[in-house]
Amino acid sequence: MLEKYSVRTDLALEEKERFESDHVEIPGVILEEEYDEEKEIRITRVKVETENGAKAMGKPVGVYLTMEAPNMAIPDEDYHREVSEKLAGYIQELIRGKNLENEDLSVLVVGLGNRQVTPDALGPYVADQLCVTRHIVKEYGKYAMGMEHVRLISAIVPGVMGQTGMETLEIVKGVVEETQPDLVIAVDALAARNSKRLNRTIQIADTGIHPGSGVGNHRNGLTKESVGVPVIGIGVPTVVDAATIVSDTMENLIEALESSEMLKGVGDVLKTYTGAEKYELVKELISPHLNGMFMTPKDEDDMVKHISYTISEALNLLFTNKNDGERIW
Image 1: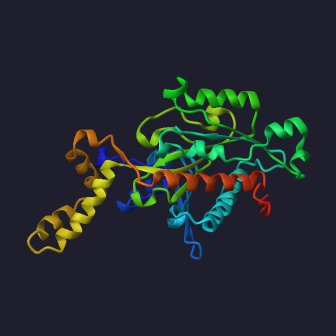
Image 2: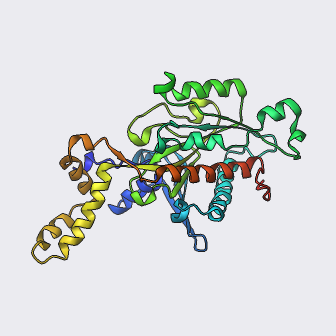
Image 3: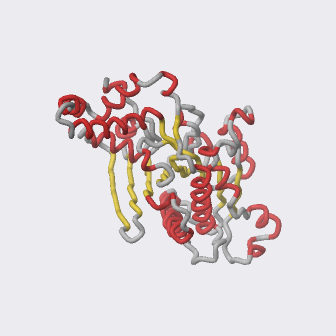
C-alpha cells in the first residue's frame, strides 16, 4: 500500500514532513528552521542538494523557503505589512543566490491562474496590484520615477489553456524573448496536505514553478531551462484535496475511539497504520468522484485578496519602494 502512496501537495516542507513521520532520512536534503516569537512567523528552509534527494522528494534541486504565519488569514493591515517586509527579504535572499543583485535589474512578474476561479486567482490579483515601471523607465528614463534607482518591473497574466488555447510556457517564453528580463517571478496558487496551512503559508522557491501541479493538471513548468532566465516561484496553498480532509477526520476518529472502552480495540488497530497507509485507505474507501474533488475555505475570496496584497506589497517594497518604506536594497 505504501508504494502507491503519494501525498498531494506543492509544499516541499510537507514532502519532508512525510518522510520524517515515517522516520526516514533523506540524504542530500537539509531542513533548517527559525521562529519569530513576536510575530508568530515560522521560517523553514528545505535545501535539496543532490539528485538523489530531488528524486526522493519529487522536487528539483534548489532552495525552498516556507513562511508560516497563522494570523495571515486575518485582515490586519499592520501584521500583513510585517509579513510583506519579511517576504521581501527572503525573496531578496534567493535573488542574491542567483548573483542577480544590481541596480538595473529587469524583472517580469507572471501572475499564474484563472482570475474567474477564486482559489486560483492569486497570481492575477498580485499582478493587478504591482507598481510596474518598465514602460515609464523605457520612455522617460529612471529619474521620471522620482528615485535614483528604479528596477524595470513588468507584469503579465497569461491566463489558462482553457482561455487562451496556449500553454502558459509558450506565452511566457515569447514575452521573455521579446522583453529580455533578467529574472522571472511566477506567482501561483498551490495545494497543501495540511488544511491548517491554507492561506497561512507562503512558499518561495528558486527552482521555478509548475502551473496546475497541485490539482493534478500538469503543465509545462516555468524554469530556467524552459524559459531561458532564472525563475523564482511564489505560491500560497489555497486548496486541499477531499482525501486529505477525510484522512484528518480519521485521525480525530481514532482519538475518539481510544477514549471509548467499547471501541478501544478498533482505535488501537487503526493506530498501527502509518500516515501513508491511512491516506491510501481513505482514497480507496471514499466515493470515486470525491478523489478528484478539492476543498477551499468558505471565505476564500477575502483571504485571496488579503494575501495577494501582502505579496504584491513585498514585491513593490523590494523593487520600487512604492510604499515609502526604507529601501530593502
